[in-house]
Length: 228
Image: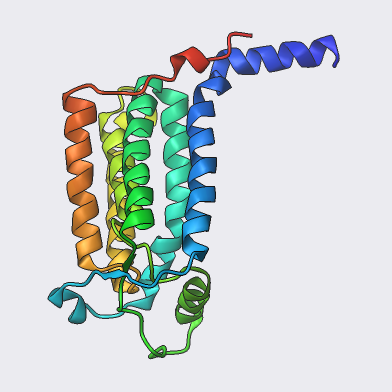
């Protein structure tokens, strides 16, 4: 490694402290492995999650776009909070770890299933095709609580709580809030989740907010910072 490259890496580490993100990256890797395993294990019994209101909610295939945008929303949220506010990043990651760990435990020991998917698509368009592909890769099991809703909510909390960067701007907060609401609505409009999953995820996020923000129980990642 040339001396110039070493200096470039050192400057990058001093500016971004990439090691600070290592614990969350490790957790996400473990989460994906665990989730992949429980998704492939056949179960004899599932707890069915559904509310009467789910039967009257229409199927709106256009909401598949905000549903898919969730993946970018989460990545964007983590990166921008990480860059501008490390204290907020620690709070955000603590809430993500709590909620996602709870989801894994529930899915492992109390597997759930929702019976809301349509037997056939009512229309043939690009949106229903996207939903069809989604349904072939994502089973209607292990749905409680909705991680789509939970992660979206806690990232939005971080956006409104961050003390630095563009997250303080009203325009940024307005745009991301509307984006978050559309993502949450998409989960029940494309029949991926029951309202029970959605409301439960919001309630859990509220409880975690009390634990992390009001009681200040936060996992601090500063010891991982790289000081090269």
